[in-house]
Image (cartoon, rainbow, N blue to C red; front, side, top):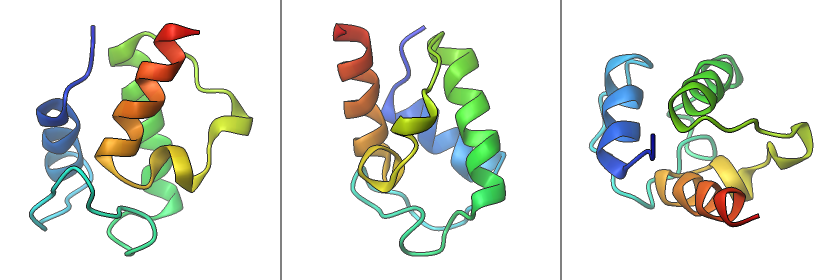
Length: 80
């Protein structure tokens, strides 16, 4: 399955209890909306739903600090 903005936004709002309006460029970690404990849940969701494995070296803000960055990361991973 390919994840979309809507899929990620719904998961973050429903499962991680983020009540803010999320744009594609809303900073998730830098702004404090999501903490490191939530990151584990988010990564598990991404791996399960997108059928990818996230390398530990890829877990950094440039790849996961917004929905847009997550989608870009997934696109790069799919192209590799």
